[in-house]
Length: 497
Image (cartoon, rainbow, N blue to C red; front, side, top):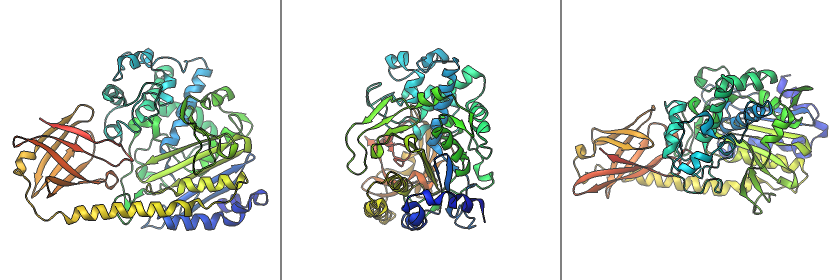
């Protein structure tokens, strides 16, 4: 009998009926509904692992099964590791979370000079800049920019909200906070996190950096179907330049130890790994996201601490976070009052089941009325997917060999965006090709009609969109380029040089 089977059975008599009798079938049914190749789940309760199991495959072609050792990119679930490390350094009196960023990086600037003079480590860990969610990520994510270069470019992120007032999820903020660790300890973020958290916890198969994940034993393969009818394999992300925001690669076996530590005030197997005051510091509310009753879930408030979301799910103080990378979506959750922790890892990024399953499990343990979240959410998701496929099919049907308003060479050349940098547009037969600087990314432009082109990225996860050039007096002035909202919500304007 395998380790995962033993762990699944242990303590089963004490579990809710849904966990004992229905969890397996619910997961298998949900994976089929949402086209998820592989899923790994761990549940810890009362200091023990009660469920640890893999479902499906980590690769569609090789059919290698998912188990407790299968590696997933946990993405933004890395953020609590960063916040915990900084809270521990504060406990050790190496820094204060209210230290200004300019204390450690005098050259650092934000778009607004007042923000520059006031922004602190805690602000960065709480997403306080006032920027939109994911703003800047098209520039930063999967780029070859250095960490310092990303921090430098943050001065070009024009906020849409007010400093410390509007919520906007910010990956480059977490990078900036994480860079303070090296300034204080002399160790890069990845070394400090491994030395102070992962190694003491015995998370020996967890990698703080995700580069070369494809070469790691037991790595799951990333897939998406965001812009296609069928699953497509996507390249592994390399976001080591944003590491404190989301580079960790792990498995449910190792993450179970992290959950147990969270539920035992920083202890694991009786040993204090992280001081309780540091753990508690990450759970102090810093950002109000919503204080209105959720219409679907048993939640009245939703807030952010340091690297972790907080709510009153089922009237219990609940801490959770999701993580999204190309081809992977994951979540972790823990309720100290119930001594309950959950982690769910998947390798299809275009689905909601990884979160719906968490709600289903929480309802079972909190003895809330049964509602099938999967059945509730699936119809809308399928309708939205069909709308996307129909829209793309409509674009494809408009590619008929029509001629654009200007000769192809009028569109070619160099274009510039202050935040992103350069792109180069060249001709390729009857089409155009875009080469993006600082990354392994290209896109093709096929002319449709009515001055619109069909934009297709070489990376399937970036999307398929219509595109228009801004033309004045017979000359191309600029072009707006859109990417998947999963990466960044607003288009970028590139000026022709």
